[in-house]
Length: 170
Ligand code: CTP
Ligand code: MG
Image: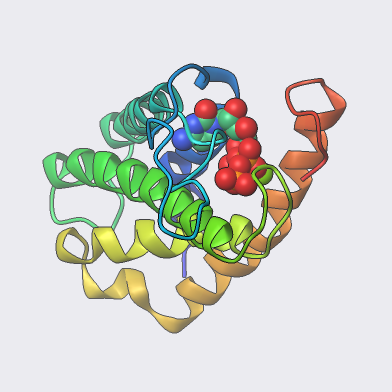
């Protein structure tokens, strides 16, 4: 396992997941819709601007990686570029799915929840399956990206809170 390859692979995912706190705001993704349980579909923490902005930021970041560095997980630079979009989009979908599950379980927007830390990674990885080589999903790679994310995600949230980007340290 080449560490640098996995770290560069994670860039579109991490950028897509972290940028909405700066880029988000405005109209909620669910347009205020509630389900039969009386709770919001996603809640005010998921906005259209955050979703689109995060997807674009992750795509650009992964695209820049694709220009300079060919990852072994993709058959061509073009595919790697497209995968950057798929990974960023999958990240935001996973983030929204996490919120959907939180709302169904009665967890309020902004409250911490285990899925916050990994749901985005799970969906990004599932989305990229059709576009990546099988070796990406080697056991050691998967363990590494999950363990790293479980460490990095809480740390970046604490940092975002310290520098005033987030009101809460999670
Ligand atoms: N954000 C956004 N749009 C998104 C995702 C995030 O605008 N699609 C912004 C919101 O301002 C959000 C902040 O980034 O409050 C932090 O994101 P996150 O922690 O994922 O959302 P929460 O507010 O905790 O809401 P939830 O409980 O639904 O996860
Ligand atoms: Mg949160």
